[in-house]
View 1 (tube, helix red, strand yellow):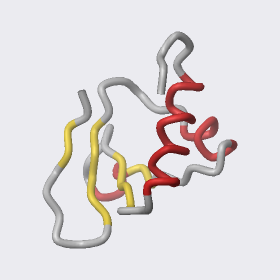
View 2 (view 1 turned 45 degrees about the horizontal axis):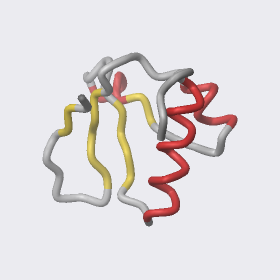
View 3 (view 1 turned 180 degrees about the vertical axis):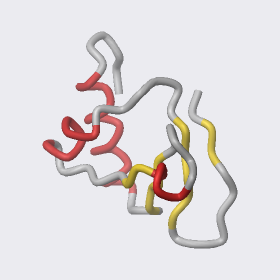
View 4 (view 1 turned 30 degrees about the vertical axis):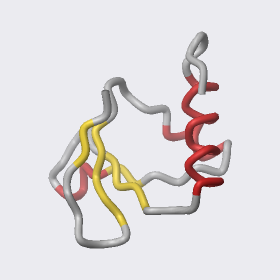
Length: 70
């Protein structure tokens, strides 16, 4: 359910299907930049990272939403 925008850089912008709790993600070592300053409220800037970082993001998102498996 995430929307993504194409990118030619090492980062891209995504819009999740539900609001993200940035404090929770940061407490789990996940750093996403809110894209509101880019004129894109509700969107987040994500870097292209190795699979271990992607798995950490999936676990942090699942932990933030009880009942959702990673």
